[in-house]
Image 1 (tube, rainbow, N blue to C red):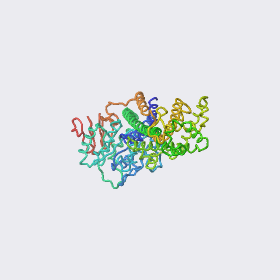
Image 2: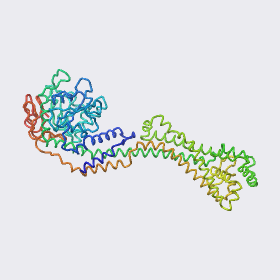
Image 3: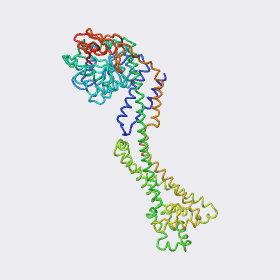
Image 4: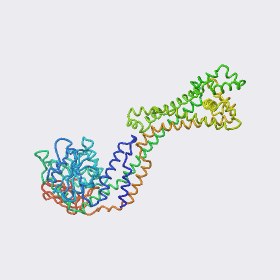
Length: 634
């Protein structure tokens, strides 16, 4: 059916972590994701594929409520392990009819849990009992408030996978908040529910039942099927309850097992409620995914800004002449000196050109100047890379989700991110050498012009190329002439010599092209450096469009919602009156000595029990009955 396909489409985006960043209520969002994926895997998808499969009733409740003792008493055998030490239920036990064993031993229900022999969290022990009729299974779940986190999570998972909750509380702890948070969840999702009030002193049956009924009404669960189990003196913690104390519950369960129509109503009620809950749960999850995506975008923009700042630092280093104040200037001055340079420049350009020609043709090794230039530009690149990494790390530390991501990486990896990559020096050298070859190619290309060929030849390609390289760092693209603060007059000299070789306009064009090529190469290197940061994001970032995919799947589910047959409601004796509660059919016998309960909204229990509900009648030794004309105890 299309409804099943829509649910499968909803499940697919949930296969990965959608909330890796600590932004907003990330812990709550992760829990909601786990719960939704778990309910799809453990209940919605398996149940929709087999609507008529046996009904699963999960026995849940707080620590020490007596769940395991109740299950043993209901089936008349020691199938679970009660005891004094807490937690007692470490491995959930599933009690099934022999006729249903093959169904539950397969992966039809709770497919993520191993079967039969498992002894740790995440395992499911399956036992058979002739006391249970075919069509109904009981699962003894761990405590919902267990001190062991894995037990609490498993208990919540099992309850989410149930068709019916048999929720156990005690006279001493029925008002605790933890159980009520689960009960309200059952109400919100219209989960079929019955409540067992266990270990009730005989004198407290009436007042405790009345107060519990009041609390149920206040929490939107009025009419919930309520069984009361009187306190009994047991010879040991492992002893079972008297048969008459649990007969109302066992008779009710037996009725469910034999009534296919009633089982179907319970299944469809819980299934419908779970489907309806998706209309609010999935959009809320999609909104949380969008918050994560916004945080990823912010972290990515921090990195982009940091490395744009690094590029700006490199640009400033190219234009402020600082690069020509170090080794480059020393190698330059070794040849031409500085004392009379500026005074003689205009009158003795030819003489200077002869000196330069000698310099570049072997009288003085031009390799020293080229190496110095390469070293200076490489240092400038490394500084830009280091500064960018430091800014990016600081930005992440202050951005939403960034500090948590750095903690996740650990101090060593975070410290490495805050510096340029170890091989950035080698890559910077390769970048500069590649640029120098490009500049020489420019000179060769320009030297093909007849009018400049002789002048280029007089300097040599290497000599003219070095002059052009110096011009890149000693002027603003050849557009403004001398740069203020350039050491030793290097700017003006290189500018004049270049103009003597190529002409004014050609110098402007060549310098701009050389500078742009170098900037492009440095920008590429910094982008590669920034990938050290963005790779951390890509490794954990949810696929873009996940939020939209979730919303589209939820809309599709609602569009095909009518494919599920509706739950029968409003029939006298078939609904217990409260939202999310379903009981037996008209005139259902709940068991217990002389305790027959029927009528709309009836609530039943056993010997010494309290019965409430409009028009309810109850027999049984010591029973009190509430309702019209009967002294309402609710």
